[in-house]
Image 1 (cartoon, rainbow, N blue to C red):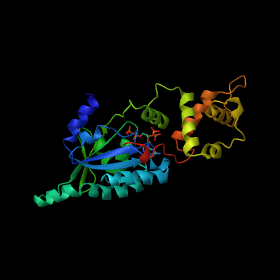
Image 2: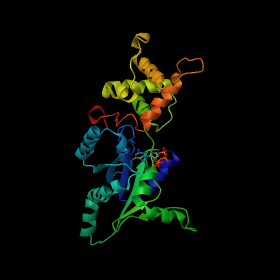
Image 3: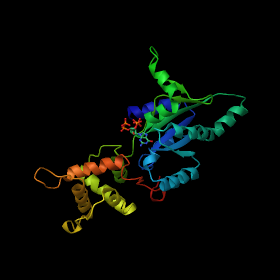
Image 4: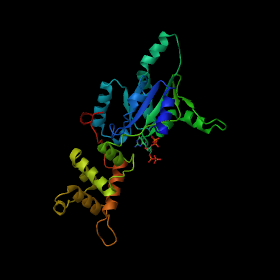
Length: 282
Ligand code: G4P
């Protein structure tokens, strides 16, 4: 068992609620398969983060998917303070059963203890910092405070563990690996940059036709040069329109591939979601 998983198992004993952060562009690939077991008997909440870069229509479908499973869910941009207002409400919803249990036992005002969990890069630290705001900063800056578990008091009803739980994605599934590599969540070891870019072109042309053309504004695509690989023709069109050329004037595919991936990862090309609930067995 990895150290991160052991740590998660220890931390989870201390809490009532698991706030699971997923990447709204790839909710399936950014989900950890172990979470259901790890968080059994805990209240659960799913946050579809980076929703500012995701396709709003598909985010709606994903929200329905989690709601149908009985898991309270929100979409958000963790960098945006305004998006935090909805969290308190959904936390209450997720913990309704716990509050009810406490009330029956005569326990009043015991705050919910929560932890944030998710795969690397999904936005855990950003979320904690924005959600906790000044409270988080205060805990971190206090000199002499022993390192270890710190609880950030968010309101009279919620306390948050300051260190997020790190979960690992399911690398074995090739398509999951591809989606994680495309969003930049992991470094892809199997595909090189040009192949990765061409996979992205393939997915976008299928699900979002016209989006690439709209963004890069190319005049034409030299499909006849690549009869077997239309994606290569599109990459060439991107290279030409963006001046990705090597010294001798030949096409610099690597540069074009890096540019395309960067534009996608920064949400510049448009709001894109690579997965839909009906095609995933999440
Ligand atoms: P982690 O703790 O889960 O590993 O993730 P972290 O908060 O470090 O966030 C990873 C990257 O994702 C950061 O960008 C962060 O700004 C960005 N991010 C987090 N939440 C959101 C969101 O809701 N929307 C968008 N668009 N981006 C988000 P970075 O490039 O690594 O750092 P920086 O340039 O922001 O400093």
